[in-house]
Length: 237
Image 1 (cartoon, one colour):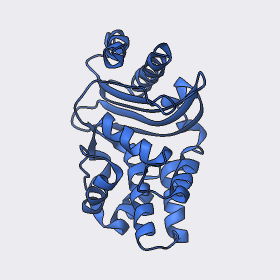
Image 2 (cartoon, one colour):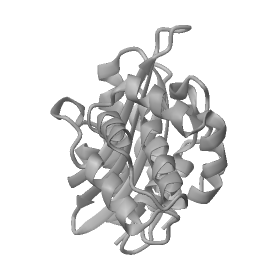
Image 3 (cartoon, helix red, strand yellow):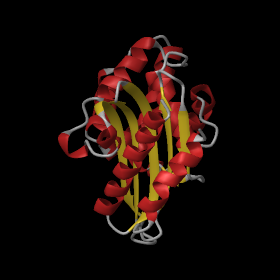
Image 4 (cartoon, helix red, strand yellow):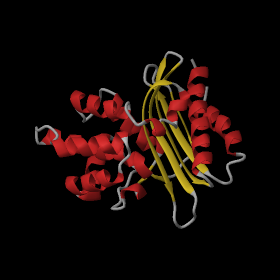
């Protein structure tokens, strides 16, 4: 079964009423190793880049063989659980700016991500976000077991109003979402990355999209694509 083709076929009708919005998705069954992807190109990260930024902070702490400071812990918590933007701006400056993020991307398996000073405009791909999730939720990772557990815990505790996105595809979720209206067009970027448990499968899932007329329509499409992606893997078993 061509899982990429199956996912593309499942997503195509979902785009019929999307008003020209683009979407790209990548999903991995961590147990069987089955994976599927659809769509292509790069997208603005919006706030999903905060997972990347905290991962880099943890890598730097590992390199220096030290624990996070109280300030770093507070910033990381606010960035993931509340999606706090001021904390993200301060943390990016503290770790060395976008150049430091780009330097760490190879260690995390991200080959198509380019950091930006305006961190929400970092460009990435669904494949890279799946690689990042594997670094956080897998075992073959530059991140230590303690670092992975720390970041997973933050993603499991996002505040109630931000528990949309990939969580629509299953339970036992851990996620980070990103949403951002573009001032040049008035259209929305809507992204969601994370882990879900569905049908006795643990799946890592990234859905990136842009060009939405409203935030609400973007969330609805991302959730529908997330369900389709997990469903395709389920049908392959």
